Length: 107
Image (cartoon, rainbow, N blue to C red; front, side):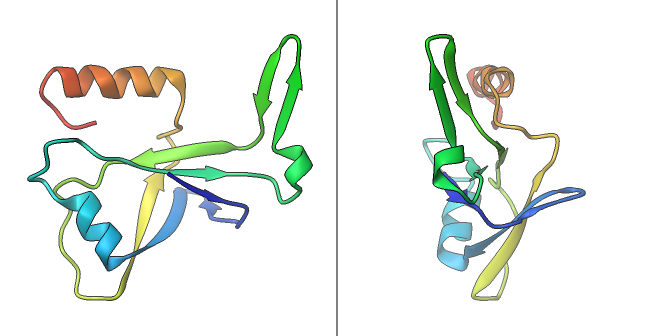
């Protein structure tokens, strides 16, 4: 999981730059544990990140995710990956990921 206040959300999703070591680790298809990349976008002002009350907790902005297992290798020091806008890291999407993994698939 990565956290940023940078403006990385574009029309098609989050554009995130990974070192080639991290990219290769996340794309490795021969892994026992499935891995996903999650990028949490937060407001610039720290005091705006979280609001707590008796009714609950509100986390501002959003997180997106992507599974890179089996992605193509690259010959560079860095790789910019796209976390699709539709892949919002929510309770519903997390439950769907767990179901896919439970059924023998990728997150």
